[in-house]
Image (cartoon, rainbow, N blue to C red; front, side, top):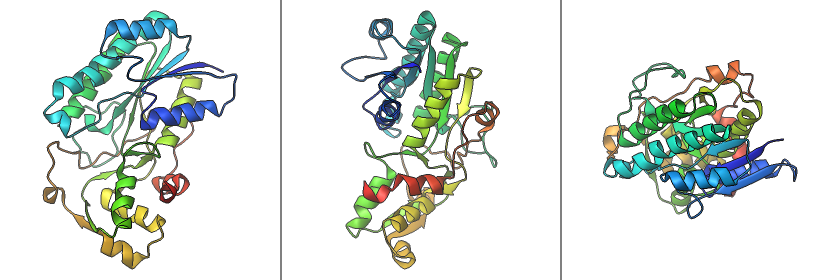
Length: 290
């Protein structure tokens, strides 16, 4: 058993981590901290919390994830996504503990035609992606012997707003949706990611960059139709409720990677539990019950 510190414990992933760790029994020491208890952009706050808590593994699930707002608030996003991981890594290095920090497919430009490897060249094209790239580099430099960067993508879960909840809210009200069909990625259930991160913290293989997403690939359009189908709609109803459009027909302030499929090479080499398919994860998540 290990002692865990979850930073960003009120978020979608943070809440899943607390639940998953809590299921392991009272012998597991778990502390969750969020805004009001820690400011990851302030060195004194970070050092105070990390020196006051008895933990073996710190999981950083805190992030500035407002992708479009980051385009006009890059300085704020940088403080949370880059400075925050750096300060946590420095504090973990000083206390000789492992840091697992979450990153994103947005560190890539999406021009690839096959899954990105962990050592593929970063080339972000959005403010969000640039700040997450900076966080990866800073954390690994600050604590090279104990930092694990875990990139994930298209995360959804029971807690907080996310794509499946939006699809269900609109379609249950009879609203048809236009959903982009030319962005390809891997929808990933936050609960699966939480269990994957815990397995990583338990085993602590060689530090560095790892990828964890559901396996397979799909478009937002196909994902939306799968969600509506799970909610009990017929194939004909799914067709009428969800229409595919191109990215050019749905402009956003931040550019999205058109292809953001991540390979799990290092994850597999480390002997960690293999992620299941995105379809299997969606079925187990039972989003229609949320």
